[in-house]
Length: 101
Image (cartoon, rainbow, N blue to C red; front, side, top):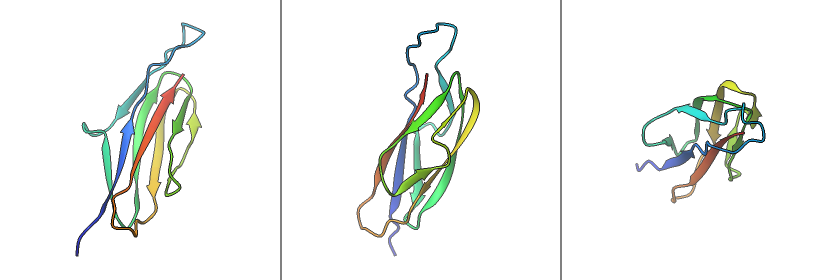
């Protein structure tokens, strides 16, 4: 039996300009070096832990993925990324962006 992997790419788009220079806009992601999450074709989830210098949001496209939190305040954060089962022969790919500022 072949296993089809669902690949979720994570790009931490981090540095943003702010009106108030005293606010730091950064995100430090505790993450695999490749910035790739692979989930089995049956679906599954993965936690992304990070630290944000200011308020943050998550941006992504795809009806087959969801996140536990779409936004939050500065400090330590955790977003659980979940994917539905993939019943198609093709891999699915999504890009998630953690944005701060």
